[in-house]
Image (cartoon, rainbow, N blue to C red):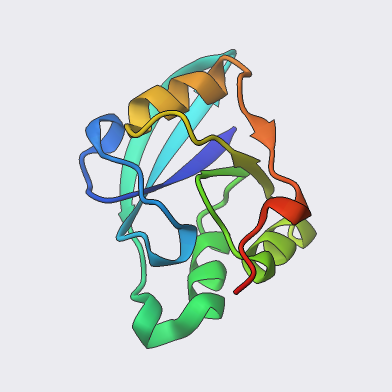
Length: 120
């Protein structure tokens, strides 16, 4: 499984998580197999101000993702990802990417619901 976590830096599992999907500077992509993180890569996100929310969504969809683990996400990205077959999960306890990724790998994160999305 390929999981994207919106991140503030390109420091992989040591990066701090970004508070909102659309404006994150990077995505930390974790490959998870049998409950373990087997590969980590950092991918620079496109500039939200240049391409808008739709451009960020389009870019993320090119990363061959199975899921996104986010703190917050607006309704339009949530709908587009779920329609594209990319599962959206929510986790708000861990500030560090590695801690959140390990919680996900251990099955401790839940699917985000539509009513949990931001209204913008």
